[in-house]
Amino acid sequence: MYHHSVKRIDKQRELNEALTPLSRFAETYNETLPLGFPHASNKALQKFQTSYPLLFKNDNSWSINKHRKRFMDWYMTHHMGAGEKRER
Image (tube, rainbow, N blue to C red):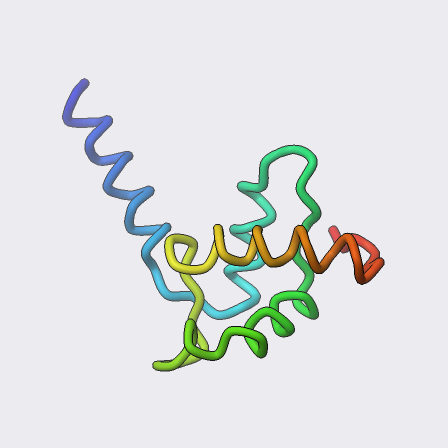
């Protein structure tokens, strides 16, 4: 039983650390979003990427570990003020 839970944790860690394209990040981000948070649109993610180019200095890849919390903080302040409609 212990061995099975370690495998699941390792698999989750791999998913969180994996570098993915914007579209896959958006999908994973929206699937794991806490209740009450607005869903991310590709447009919003692109604006975030433009606003924080140093987070993407090596390539255009996204990872849950590196970008999720930063995007959530940024999006909560910019989403509310911009009046963007939520995309699901």
